[in-house]
Length: 323
Image 1 (cartoon, rainbow, N blue to C red):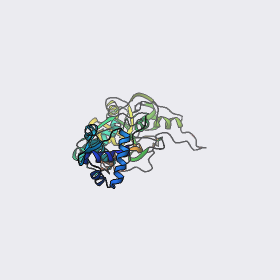
Image 2: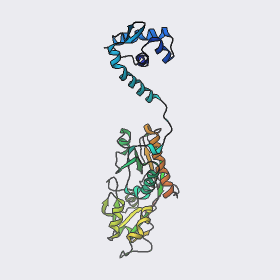
Image 3: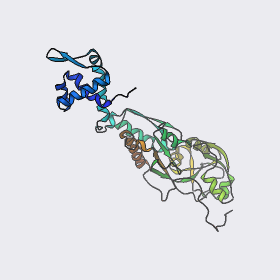
Image 4: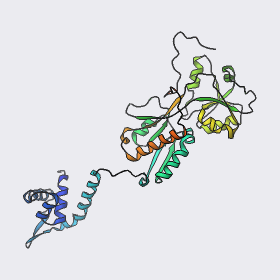
């Protein structure tokens, strides 16, 4: 079966709307002979004369009358698809975005993001989902729109923008029985630990750094949520090594004390990650800027030389282990 020649669609629409070859030629900017030739091609395509003599003029055939509105609609839709987009208006955006993020991100940035969207784009809905090991695949497939997290290894096509930096501190309850002004490495290893593991994987940066020194800690509770970890420490004798920004925010209300970690834990960077297919999407671009502006407003101070991934750096050769 021969495929339809879609280039004839505009010609057919002009013929149906005008009901004459001369009028159709004038409508699309062709000469009358050129339009007559185009009509012949339409007739061959549709196996219908389309226009027939009616006295001194022309009349549409029954099939032509039946398809008139449908062809008009198809041409209008095609023109809308090919027209350049008008200016982006955030207030007119009606869209739901899926964002991978932890409760840390929601705590630090959530209110600023919410206030900005409420004021400028009330039709936007955000659905936050947990971070996972397959975030990049979900972004590539279009199952999600944005991801915020620590992503050291990303597929090369992914786009990433640094959002904020943070560092680690130790957190204990204010009346902890062994609370000291300075937490030593020996004291640190003797305590039971709460670990935040958003992706549910055991081990991590702190454990790697301890292992380099021939040491280990006992993780008594591993949880996926920062707030849960802080609540556990507030009601127990555990210690938590956690991001300073969220620890500082809840230290007062939860009765927590912050101490420097007895390990050289480097600051780290959280990134905003997306797939390049939405680089030029005006709505997506607007949402990215909302997150960037929220980070600047709530966590604008930056830490020097932050790491983009959390694993222990290789130990320099010849360096002796501390015990």
